[in-house]
Length: 574
Image (cartoon, rainbow, N blue to C red; front, side, top):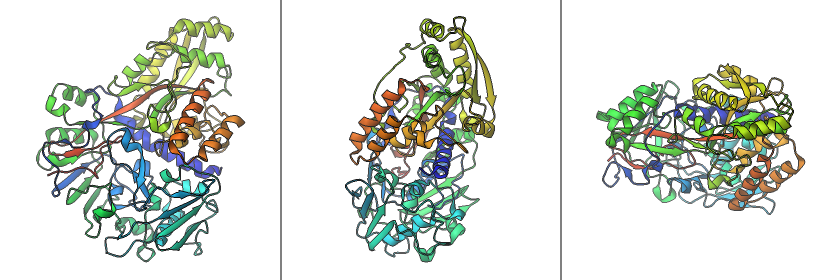
């Protein structure tokens, strides 16, 4: 494993997801899974009109090489098509990977180290020229250039020679591990088995880029569209992005994107309260507006609860994410498994859920993997303490651990708003553990200080709050970074907080990675999660739920478990 790539990937993933989770501390209407396909304003969805997107975060670096897909929302997929993509359906069905530019999910070699894709017929750019396999190869190669950093570097980790390749601006030869024997075929050679390559092929780095149209760092100003929309204006590095129809896109080659609106106006850099106020009022253009990054806050959700019309315009999303307590067994007293078990029993998940906004916004967790089939979710609770914790059992374990009179520990958490409820959750845990004879001192740190402290093995505390989300809905990118011993980073960002380096666990991770049967792989991820969970290296707390308003004239609301946000490729405004 090449650690620098892993580090950058995980930092980006954690940052992107934590931002999404930021507004989740609230109470709201009951879960309706977003209303289902066809929900929203009454009437059959039709083509035409303008969809407005009101977001707080700008759509920066609008270049397929630089976008980190998990943080890119839905806007990039309107312009950039990839070899595969997410299934654009509600809920669990939307957590599946499906073909996009490719005819299928790829053909693997026997050991899953070689993957071959064939492109569909009739694929064209916005200027009418044909999309070729060489364009996809070039698009991937330019993502290795230092000037275009920021994208997900899985390909650097997985491709033979990827670790040393510097991109086409410095190395004209290109990557030998990507072959294009003809205009419609592309072959990838990997340095180890990767059964989840079809998921990786959804990343924006597999977007075709015509070499003759590449303008380097300026490409983001007018990237060449392979999707249903093209960029006609990009102001303020993504603060204002206007998209109009790509006349050469053909629905016959694209089963996923509905592309109902004629025009999409993305306005970013807005205050979250202003966004929710505008969506609530739905006046003028805001009646046909949505958001892909702004949750409802406590006051707004209270208003929604008492207004049926507003409640009907709330989309509910589930994204694969777990908030948890992390232990560092290298720090006393957490080197003692019984201490970790005692804390596991002492946790009052009801109070934690309340601190996170209530049952509408947080679902209690006893497993590290999210409670979705795509991840291989296997129910277990190794330390059953009911809804309110079991302080008596916790005291019993503390006595066995040599602390009959209890103990005092420090819990590190973030004060940053992007970590939303960390202070509230820390306080809830402090109160619950006190009942078990555990005195908890709280150490709140600001944003970068928090990350630099808890994700560095040299400074990692013994007891802190963490959270993790995956770049695609599978056990692989969710489980391995936290529990694969080969991903422990001694110098730089480390996410294996328990510093687990169990040869048997590492071997099973390798064996699962060889599987191209994703359902079979999911079952084994779930079994491995259950096995490792017995060591109490983490205490799963809850999985967040996301609530977002949309305008009263918006039709065809679809929210998949892949992203947890409204899919604007499905929305209609007429």
